[in-house]
Amino acid sequence: MTETETPARTALYDRHVELRAKFAEFGGFEMPLQYQGVVAEHEAVREQVGLFDVSHLGKVRVTGPGARAFVDSCLTNALEKIGPGEAQYTLCCDESGGVVDDLIVYLRSDEELLLVPNAANTTEVIRRLEAAAPDEVEIRDERARLSILALQGPNSDAVLSALWIPVGHSYMSFVDAEFNDVPITVCRTGYTGERGYEIIAASDSVHVIWDALLASGEPQGITPCGLGARDTLRTEMGYPLHGQDLSREISPLQGRSGWAVGWSKPAFWGRDALLEEKEAGPKRRLRGIRATGRGIPRPGMVVTVGGAEVGVVTSGTFSPTLKQGIGLALLPRDVSDGDEVGVDIRGRSETFEVVRPPFVKTSPA
Image (cartoon, rainbow, N blue to C red; front, side, top):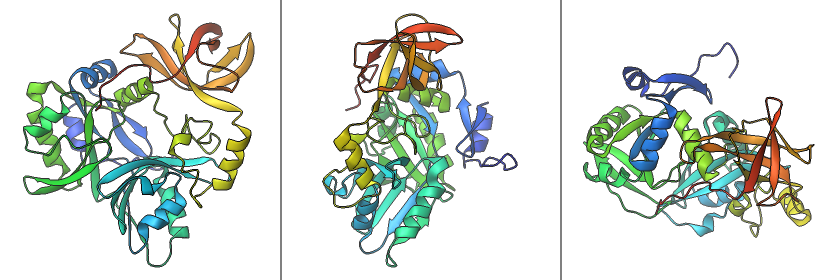
């Protein structure tokens, strides 16, 4: 988005205004940053239940004969691992092995898939797919037609059950249903580490679902949540954010996302470069860092060992759960869990311990 472009708005923008949300531009959209405060919203998700509008995410429908095989030949993960009604985390890489985007693929059949990329990268993902697709495979941008809500937290099942919306299906699976004649897809996915669901509905009807969830969730302590809490929640889990922890310059191996690569697949974008890096071993890896004092890391801060610069913080925040600073940092491969590193915070070196995320334990099953 250029400086002269106006950020887009989701179909629920007026609802957010009514709730007195504070907005921020993100991925080309004007999105709620917070309503009652980041810490309060974060704690609501960890302890009760929170509701997010994540309709800024892309929605790309891939259909036609051989659609599944085509997508499998492009993205890193192996679609043979899942069946219809299941979802999979995967990566879209370029020829150098850099990450163009990380996304979720929802598999409906061999001839129909829904891809959910990040907002800022949707156009590029679509461009790459369209350039590679055979004539019989159609790539359709459904960003405007579809909206996505994220209901996250230990009370999420109770909120949906009160509305007779299906719950209890396995993690990374989805089911179709209806609520008040509005077709919805209920997905056991999320970006917080808590038990929860993501609900896909038509944008012209999504307000019906939003209103019903807030009303049904009142006895469960439901709280509307913005992107501020979404960021602290995902950081506590060590989940990467594209553009910070994964990027064209940070490969899946460096970003500790190699588990989402089907290494035995005969083809996917960036395969040769990634196999070469895997054989040699990545020179740097994404690791967790946790403050031993009061320091709070932020993206871009320099990481040191023995006073020498060795890496950089890619994500960092104050953890509302742990009440201390945590972050993710790209560090040399000879830095190990349990080591201590310094982080330059406004000219002062603060000590951090290198740890393996997640930083907090949750019960998402």
